[in-house]
Image (tube, rainbow, N blue to C red):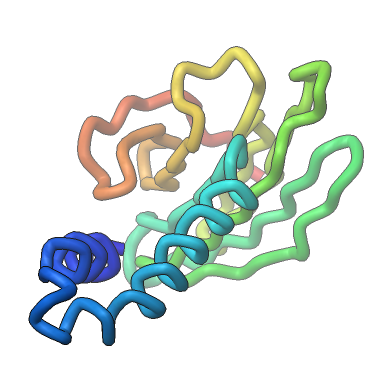
Length: 150
């Protein structure tokens, strides 16, 4: 997206008298339209991501769903993640939860998205001591859930 923005800015600042601007004109129009339609298409979407940070020998199995949608069962090795996006219903009552089991004997059921969350696009990190919510880059982790033993 940065490239497209820089390209659009560069192409729109080149004077048409140089002959170069007229070459970029249709490309700029196409890029602006593509960016705008993509933004409209994904406006209001929520993204949820779950990442396995349990350690090199621990695999997790996740089953996530809402009242209306089921996410395919997912198996993750250490360092792997999966994500999905959705548009909340007009009543703002959409809720997603996950049931996770680990290969080292832990389990947890928790809400990964509820409308009252502070974080519109939650990033969940499954770690040895528990389940953490944080930024996409793994910073600002806050423990939200503790594991249960199977």
